[in-house]
Image (tube, rainbow, N blue to C red; front, side):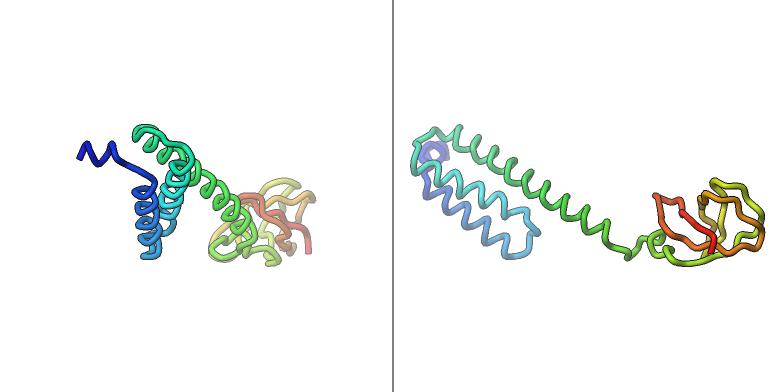
Length: 149
């Protein structure tokens, strides 16, 4: 085994990279993709620079961390942008445009507003009278921004 480790060359890394990429085709959701790419990078590095087996494994680890981190950063930004535009399973955003009736007179500021099957913290810049209709115009976290209708 030690002899095999000492004899690692670019063909071994190329084979490992291709095996990992083939495993990715079986549906590992990206886990093997970046490891396979890292093994291919080590293979390309070994073609140009002969390095010891310790440096080969260190390069593989470094390439794996870097490629995985870059993918994670890209995916995180795409997920964040997608979540901001999505209304599915975000009840607060689905309430925009709905109207409700204020049950008690409230001063300007925050108050509880029954809407749907629960009550929400609502905020209005104007004082509201009992029985007045309001419409939800925006959502800030779990606080509904309302205006008189």
